[in-house]
Length: 262
Image (tube, rainbow, N blue to C red; front, side, top):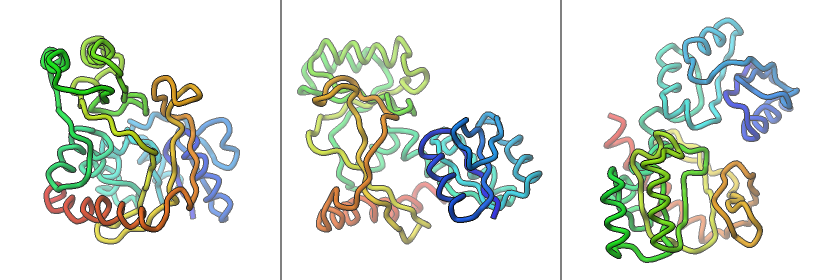
């Protein structure tokens, strides 16, 4: 089988390596210099039409999307409309990852556990609420949009929170991702990613994983994104797995198509 992997990071390299090991011919866009197992084609992932032309020219049988940005921009819808077999969520479904406000509102509506939050489209209103004592500290501030894993800041006091609001909404440190923000309560505990593959009804879980979030030792410094992760079956026990699946995974799958995918 001829497979095309979209992306250039470690996640995509792992996909390239695994597929090549199983005997397939693998292409990557844009790939990277370390992907010796793949034939790389330098192309911007926003160029959907060019990617489609490459797929047809090379006889690609399956496309797998790694990064969030092309998913949020609708590459799966674009390719499926042209008869391409592509693995990834639709543009609408990708908003669960691409918009924190979308995700938080969705969880709130369907009773899926999430930290208490407020949404702001005005820095003035956000700062007024912070100064007025609406939030206890530490507090978490998040850009609405994608920011390469760096758009989340934990502030320990009002001064830091206000500075973060200005960075996100006025100084555009995270560009358009910070046009709207979420301010939410700080929940302390162990971080975990529990990812699944779903066809809209059934699901199969991946091995649980955990990010390396803080840039410095001792849980100090800002969240970094892209620092790597560990994946291990025994990160959580069967009871926690069942709780995650019953309270989060199943309600998302059950409710999402009904409202957002008609």
